[in-house]
Length: 197
Image (cartoon, rainbow, N blue to C red; front, top):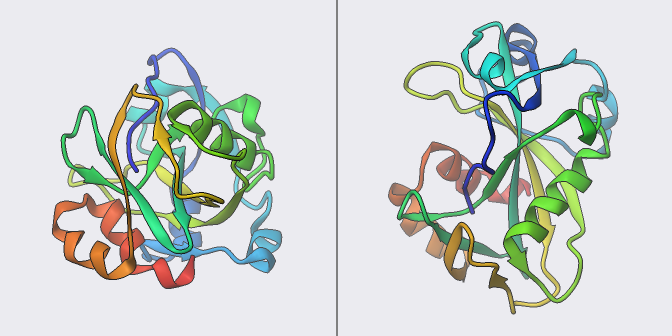
């Protein structure tokens, strides 16, 4: 699933220093975060509150963005995003100051759960876990640092709330591999690392 939650440039978001991100990821596009790694990296990077405009244009800072993927028995939920018109694997939304201002704050999981609840109707409230970091540069340079969350759906019955995502389908890893060329760079990175989720 993919899609940016609407944001005004004057909104307050969180960002991390670009040089600290490079030091943590060491050029890897995906960094898995099992529990012990979350504990090791908790609060190790400086997190600053800033306007969305500053986070978007200042090269010294990278905005933090929640990136949520969902599965039912390891069949991964995909959708067609309204604005992109192509199949996607994730939903995104900026991480905001009210979500917690420490790096890898546990409260960020609540932010990711709210994102799912805004976009999808599921049989149960989403239980979300932090799974990794996606550091996939844009053609124009560094983009946001995506904080990857995974949720397990208790039922395959999922309905879009109709705002931003349509044509929901569950797809197994093999099916996703055949879709790789249709996905954006973040989606391809997620597919390549499904075994770590």
